[in-house]
Structures are given as C-alpha cells and as structure tokens.
Amino acid sequence: MTRVAGIDCGTNSIRLLVADVDPETGGLTELDRRMRIVRLGQGVDRTGRLAPEALERTFAACREYAEVIRELGAEKVRFVATSASRDAENRDDFVNGVVEILGVEPEVVTGDQEAGLSFTGATADLPGTEKYLVVDIGGGSTEFVTGSSRVEAARSVDIGCVRLTERHVRHDPPTAEEAEAIRADVRAALDLAAETVPIGTAGTLVGLAGSVTTVAALALGLPEYDSEQVHHSRISAAQVAEVADRLLASTHAERAALPVIHPGRIDVIIAGALVLREVVERVGAAEVVVSEHDILDGIALSAA
Image (tube, rainbow, N blue to C red):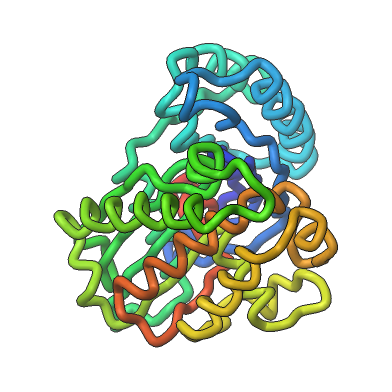
C-alpha cells in the first residue's frame, strides 16, 4: 500500500484526500477527505487575475492541509489546479504560494487532463463493461468524458457555476432573462463539446461535483447532507428539472435555510443546477447517476 495525498484546487473549492492505495488493484482506502470553499476564481472571468483575498483564502486552506498531510504521513503528494488558475495572468503568485506552504508545485492541468482524472475517479468503482458519459460541473468549467474501461473522448468547456453566476446574475432570484442567458451559454458550450465528444451515445450519464451532489440531495429530500445516500443515487430527469425550477424561484435567504446546501454554494447553485438540467435534456438521459468520487479520487490514484 502507498499512502498518498491528492489536492484538487478548483474555481470554487479546494479539496484534500489522503488515502492508502494498492498500486496493483487500484483499491483506495480513504483516511481523510475534506473541502473548503475558497472561491479562488473570484472575478477571474471579468479581470483575468486571481484576487489577493482569494489567494489568501486558498493559502489558509493549504496550511491546514499541510498539517493533515504531515500528521498522516503521506509518502506522495499531488496538487492539481484547474480552471481558475489556467485562466489567470498572475498564476505564478498562486504557484509560488503553494510551493512555499506544501513543498510541491501545483500542476495546472489542461481541460482534457482534468477530464481524464475526473473519469478515472468517477468510474473506478463502477462496472467496467458499461459505456459512460461523465460530466463534471465545476466552478469555472465543465468536463465531458466518454468511455468504458478507459477514456475515449474528452472536452472541457468554460461553463461553471461561479463563472456563469458572475457573468449573468444581478438579481435575487435571477430574472427570466438572466436564467435564459445562462442556458444560452450552456447550450453553446454543449455544441462545442459535441464536436469532440459523442455526448448522446453513452449508456449511462454520471454526474460529478458539488452542483450535482447538491441537486441530488435536494431531490432525495435529505434533511442534511449525507454523502453515503448521495453516492450512486439515481436522479431522474424530471427530478433534476423540478429542483432546478425550485432553486430558480428561490431567494438567497430561502436557499440558505436548506441545510443540504453548503454555505459556499448558496449563491452559485442555481447556475450549477441549470447546467445539469441542460446537459440531461441535451443528452436525452432518463436519469443521472450521481458520484461522490471524482477528480480528487483520480488525483490520488494517479499519485500512487
């Protein structure tokens, strides 16, 4: 067994997974999994730069994670940074800060690399005989990957819950025009994704990341978030549409009163739910299989 630490730093959150991995079987035994909402991508779509306060929030989480990694004695550490840091002019400030705190250089991966890691993590505990379309809805981008036992096609497009919220939402709740602007961006991005990925041919749609898991928790009517009930739940297309409509009509205060929504997602979950709804409708899927395992698990497995 190899003890590894994987860190996934996205546009909205930074997450840590410390696990023991069997390199021969690919089996993963989780020791510590945690998340902090740091909103690294704050304003990046508008300014092209990482904001100083966003960097400091991220570095504070890195200092916490460094302590956990030391305590658990991880032999290998892999830090992967995705959409926000790909887009930022001052990403060297981010890289240098992470190196100083954690002693490892963050890998600013391409969208296709991100997609591959997401697929690996999401399908590791699913039957290898089925064909999947894995959709990872992040803060800044969304990845589409098809394959069965391996990746066959992948595409990353710049639609994410933070990016779309910052770009279009000015009212609470969003106006019909703002909601339609989000949907139009998503439809255009789906057209781009379809140039590379046959998004309508996979047998099983698998949805990843916080927007998807939050929609699932709401659809399941959970009184509080429960990852065990969310993982591998099957949410129908009608349930996705119902939750998206309910969120779209809600105010910030009404969403904040729902315990299953993480405080850091209250302002961006509407856009995330609209992305998921458009994807489900475009693919023509009867349901989405929700996975708690995603790019973070792929990072940990690759580190081993």
